[in-house]
Length: 286
Image 1 (cartoon, rainbow, N blue to C red):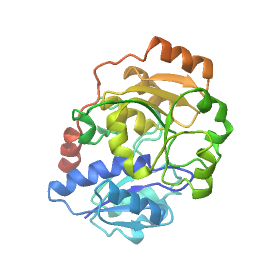
Image 2: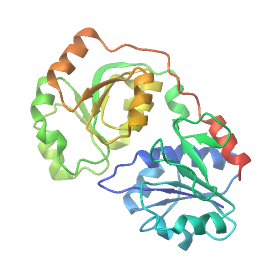
Image 3: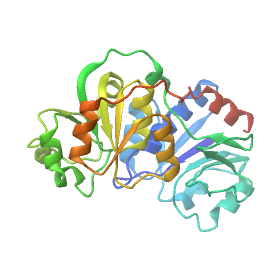
């Protein structure tokens, strides 16, 4: 059995679940028995929308071995401190894979690292995008805004003038609450439900987002992508977005955004490939 632990929660969003779904669906297609581990029940429900039929809820990274057994394999996508638990995992489990959290994050106990800048056979690429975004899609003349799956600090409301000045349609996050949606209706003429995520990312001509994973997916789907940098992603992730010709603006800079729209966001061939090679490397190490 392979277990995939994706750190989730209403303050952390669901980017890791979207990556996990790609990997788990492909592994399952290759006949490998898998299970998704998440931190909250809601994340497991969302994972079903992305094709993952089952999940188990655990508290933290330290509880992985409460579910996984000796001889199983584990993929860990989490920024949490494992408090020394990783050494036990690498000893007990057949294979352990871990997503690097920074450029300096190295393998500690022999686990295989998944990293953005993977230039040797010792690691595996962590740039994971679902095949659906590589397909041809008819584009609609819309500017779609997706902050992320959570907005605990009410960032959107705090920058209401930015959105009132620019015609955008809002894609709601899965962790948005009903009362919050009522406030957002005063800012946006059009609100889309979270369940429409894949269709809207694929079909929107322009996507504005603060989600790294969404920026990758929209770029692969050949949208014009503008990334709002609110200091929640790593420098490595920022550098990758620059390589993909994703336009970045600091916070909600209205003047910069308007100038971008006048100049038009450039479309460049994507450098991101399908995830088949990543899956093949994972299977070879199981």
